[in-house]
Length: 426
Image (cartoon, rainbow, N blue to C red; front, top):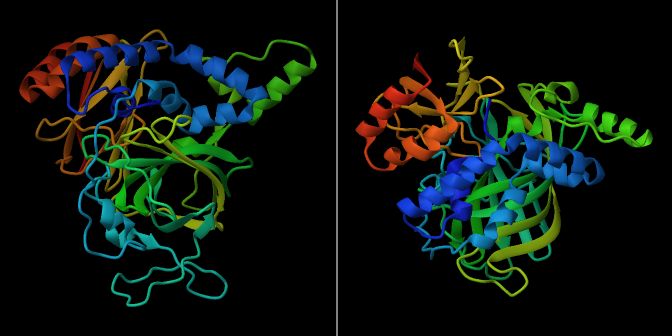
């Protein structure tokens, strides 16, 4: 099981200071615990409401726009001083430009496909960094004074990472600095078509990077396969039938989810066609009275279909499927050159939280909006130790030690964890 939202993401949205603070962290964790406890009820209500307003459901499933909107009223965002960029061209080099601030670090260069119009038929191809002439990018579109270019991609066994350059005719406002890596953020509200799906997917995609200058934002947009492989047609059909009979819409809980929802298989190669309908950024100061600290622009940035090919280099799935007497355990671990994803299992009446430590006993942090998608940059993951704790106990008592003392944190995990597994990743 994978959690919907990472603690680090919600801390970004809810935090009232630019530095770690025990009192702030305590209040945030209380809110996080409350969110976790109400997860099933929230899913049920959102899905029922979504039949009448489909976009609301899709945003809840595929993106974090709702969460950001709810919690943004409490933001007092810290000032931002963007880091100096590498002295290399932006287009075609987004991954290299923002690797020091992107939570997942550097994308594998040899597995990156750079996108441009190489031939008359629009085929994509790799372009050398040493090319003297800037290529004509096929995946570039302009509207409302904003030009958006998709410059490159890397597809792992867990997600597709797109390099995105956003250029504005007017200067951008100063965006807030977020997270431990001090990245800046623009969110793209999208409609997405994939060749393995029979229906459109909607998303709120985080583009994490930084302002290269007042008119240029460079970042990486990560599309998790678990965001785009949900097939909701059974639930929609059940809702139509209930509505025709004048009955209540069917309730969806964790126990009944499988009755109404299935998952598409994401193949090794597929076509992706992305349309961006609006952009939103979080700023360090108020933009105007209507939008507050949010930069917003609407438009229609539709890109041609792009062929995505998953890389098989240094990716693996380690199947474990082990549970203890309490029904708590670890199903599998997915690994790529940039991330490690945990899949845990728990009984219906128990809420848990999993932590992974690298070979040196250092905690792996979430790199995305999913708490179990962990960034591996800077870690020795030849051996990984997974601890699964009771959720409230971890949030209320254990987690604070991760910010203070690594050895004490490890000792408490050893004492309190309901499940432990040492996994050889080699």
